Image 1 (cartoon, rainbow, N blue to C red):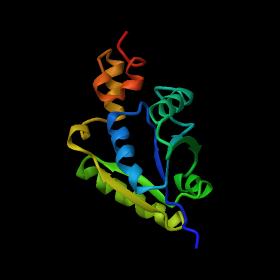
Image 2 (cartoon, one colour; image 1 turned 60 degrees about the vertical axis):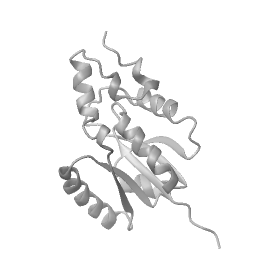
Image 3 (cartoon, one colour; image 1 turned 135 degrees about the horizontal axis):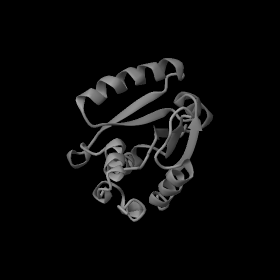
Length: 160
């Protein structure tokens, strides 16, 4: 009897990817046969870093992880999951308020996504204060955001 592979999609903007994102993926690798880090593209939203740069960075960071793949999508996350035969969504929780929001989204995804299961991992304390939004604000203010991003991309975001 063939075992259906456990494929997870970790959706997000990753604009830019942070140490918290990397930690979440590394901790999830033993749980899944394949993890697809998927950049959701919203044509109505202007990104800080272009899609190509974010894809390049993700591929660089995870190039040695044979269970991690990088892609992008438009539209509903559950439709991307169906296309990739993914049966899990991977999400991180930093605060209690994250849970309230993510719980609602996971219930909607389960209903419209053919019973896709959302797996939540709690952020480790040393990363719970880091978000892409905060990192972007530090960069915009010409501050040093390198302590919050993977070393592979630190040189690309240093203040000018």
